[in-house]
Length: 361
Image (cartoon, rainbow, N blue to C red; front, side, top):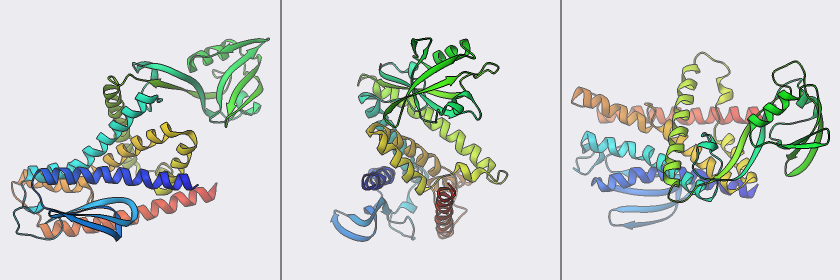
C-alpha cells in the first residue's frame, strides 16, 4: 500500500510538473516575467529566488504551478502575459499540452527499449524482438464452456491437451482455430493465475461460434533497438492520442443522453486503483500507465472549457477572428475562476462516484 501511495503521488506530480514546465519554458523563452515555479501546492515549505523567479517546494505534493505576471491580475508591464501578442499567448497556453504528449513519447521510448507490450498497436507491426508472448483472457462469456469450467478474466492461457497430445498457441487466432476445430471435445487447459500454474478440464461447446467461450488478447513484449524506439514510440503515442480523442468525444456526446456514462468516467480514486494494479504487475506497467494518463491529461486540457488551456486558447482564437479583444481581461479572469470552481466540483462528484462504485462491489 505504501509503495502504491508513493507511486501514485510520483505519477501525478510528474504529469502536472511536465505540463507546467511546458508553460514555464515557453514563457521564459518568449520573455514573459515568471514570478514563481512551484512543485506541489501551498502551504510553502521552501523557496529560493533566482533572478526574478521564485522556485518553491510546497507541502501538498500533487503537481505544481507556474505564476506569470499579468496572468490573473491586470498589469501595465510590457513583459506581463496579458500584454503579449496573440501568437505568444497561444504558444504559452498550448505548451503544457505539448509537453504532456512529449512526456508520453519519452516514456514509451524507454518502455520499448527495455521491452514492453504495445498499448494499442498490434505487436506484429512493431519492428523489434518478441521476447515473450502470452494469451490473456479478456472476458469470459456467460454460461460458456470456459465459465462452467472455472476460467476467469486475466487468466493466462499456456497450452491445451487433447488425447494426451499438448498444443501450444502463438496467437489468439491459433487458439480460436484449435477450439473451433475440436468442438465438443474434452480438453485440459493449462494456465497461469496470479503467478501460479493451474489446469482445468473443459468440454468445448459444439453448436456455437465460440466453443471455448472467451475473448482474449495477445500480450507480447517487444524489445526495440534504441535507434528505432523514437519512431515506434512516436507512432504509438499518435495512436493512443487518436483513440483517446475519439473516446473523449464520444463520452461528451453522451453526457446529456446516456445515464450510464458515469460508469465510463474515473477520477483520482480510479487512478489510484489503476496505480496499485500497475505496481503489482511491474515497472513497465507503471510506464504504460504514465503514458496513458499523460495523453489523457493533454486531451482533457485542450478542451475549450474555462480554466483549462483549451479555454484560454478559445479566447485567443475569438480575439484573432475579431482582430481585437472583445472580452475584457477582468471578465475573462472571472470566467476562468468560475470554470475552475466548477472543475473542482466535478472532481469531487467523480471522486464520490468512484467511491460509490467501490462500495457497491
